[in-house]
Image (cartoon, rainbow, N blue to C red; front, top):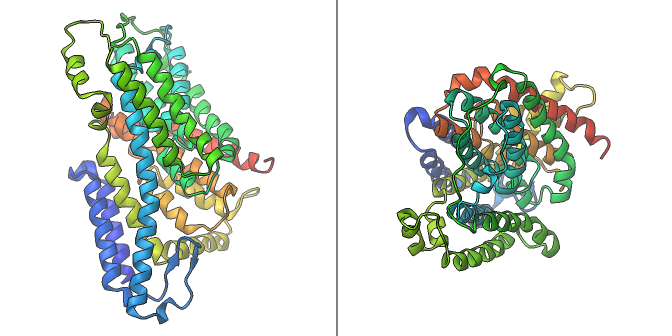
Length: 461
């Protein structure tokens, strides 16, 4: 039966990976895979001899000797446990997405565009790289990429130039998301799963992530694509006088969440709901006196009738939420049978027996680096979800921080390897092979440089 479960997971995973080829949204195979895996476990529960207790992170003793009713009860408890942990992540993401959409309702991100005064291609590259690095740490790498490419489209007219900027934005956004507990879905999963704390995560990963961004950006700044200047373009006036206020309020509310968790020790989604309530309150107040530049701005008038909160809720990425639900619960099914835990042990033993351990590294380092390269090919969310069941190290062990770094930045090596890359691919119609030829080597150099930096720093922290 274990072989059948693994086969279902591999087929579903393959369908997710090639979603652009088969023209089927990845949330469909993710949800189907989740349901089928848990159904197969329920049907074959009497044939399983091992069960993994995720709460204690250990295999249950004598599971094979229990009767049918006891096994079903344990399975139902495990299903509820995993659903609760998954719901914490999804509710957190819903709150963050809604705050970002409220900011956009007031055209708050136009404030960022006003900071860019230069016409030098090289300076614009560095401005966007640092903006992506910082902004992704606050509003997550996916949203930061959408915001910055939208701004880029208004500043850089030449599409060939924009492709290069978009490629480096992907690298910088993924690097920025890795060191923040709210910067990337995978890092958020580790944070909510109590594998990392905010202070330690920043302490371990800020410098390696910065290196991962700086090295490829520095090399790219000498390439022909970033020489010269861009054509100037008139700056559009803001659509709302409250744009900058809502931008700073929204970003501040999101940054407040880790502080709230540290002070109250409550799950992060509780703090995110409080932040959303505060931002939504101000949004409703400001929307009643929203003033646009044009008195005949029909789009603004139409939006004002529904209100900023309702408008924001209609624009959040529900397909992404459902995808995370499906993939996390599917991985939980394999974890519950102890398959991931056993796989990790076998992998670490295999690497150790092959003698591939490098000076100054541990066997787990090589496993995590492999995970980083793997995240460029397949989605990093299930890889990190699997790692939660593979390793049993305590909170803030360097292994968890290295996983956050590798999964977050490794995806930059292919355009399909991260959510930021996929959304940039759609917004600018970036060709897979163009990215592979022009940007992938820069991303790989940055990933390796950051990984070396992390391994060296680990002995000083």
